[in-house]
Amino acid sequence: MIFPDDYKMVGITQGDPCKKPLGVEPIYFSTKYIIADLQDGNFKIVEVETEQTGSLFAKAKSFKQIASGDEIVVHENEHDAHNRTKLILLALEKYNDKVNTVIFKGRDKHITFVHKPNLYDITDIQIIDVIPPEPPWLSFAIHRLEESGILGELNIKFERTYIDLREFENENTVFPCNASGLNGKYLDTDSDIKDNSLLVGCDISKEIFDIRFPRFTYKHINMCPLKTEFINPTKPFITRCCQTKRTGFININGNDGVVVHWGASEYDIVDAIKRLVNVMNGGVDEDRID
Image (cartoon, rainbow, N blue to C red; front, side):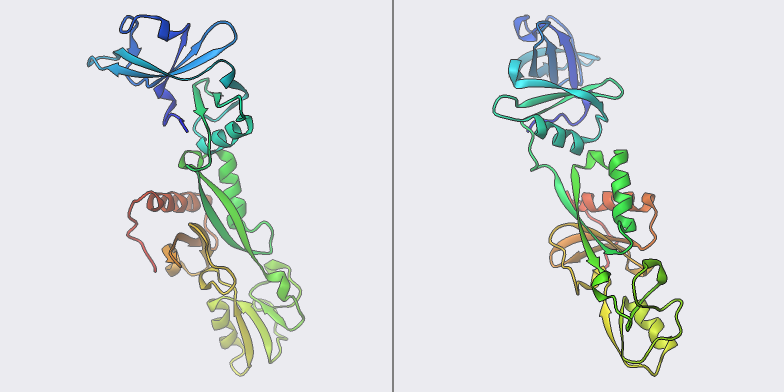
């Protein structure tokens, strides 16, 4: 796949540059690719090697054709040219035995292209969260961030894995709080909780139960995503926890992940995802909790 790192690397010209003598026409120093409008309804895309002159303009040393003619289509809509993940996915929709390159126009009118798109450069991140409510906050917030384009340059996409507490609904089941709307008892509001109940909650819920009902016997199912009682991460992941001391970077079963607070803001979530991607790309995060 060829997808310029920045649209400032892409130049636009009228006519075929390969038919002009090398070094005659100046080329902007940051240009690595040229999209040529051939004026007959077709386009040609070439990679250019330049000889830097120390000024804003360079001299072309060679051109290498990437695609031309029927191999190229121009996407019908304008898009955020910084949202690399979305452009790759859109290019894949056009990719076939005939078309191998898609030209995109940004909302700011800048031009870029994707040649021979594939998903190998896009990394899946697993969102591990608890339902209800549905969608849960972390998943909902990340969807909003995806739609905004703020994560677009990270070359990532998300898959969602949920711990569904509805399977434990019962009159003798105690849940942490009434915000879930589950059928059962609530640790934060109900006083008529019975002995030998089933507590479905995290470590904090267990601590609260022990304080409120010190003489009761009960079974505890830990639904905290960090406990992996229900779900083991299968790839890089993001999840959340109600204990601030447990937020940060973590590794579970060889999979790097990041933990945000249960009520994390979208700003906090963006920061956490960027840190995770940095580690996935070989960087180091000193704030580890494993």
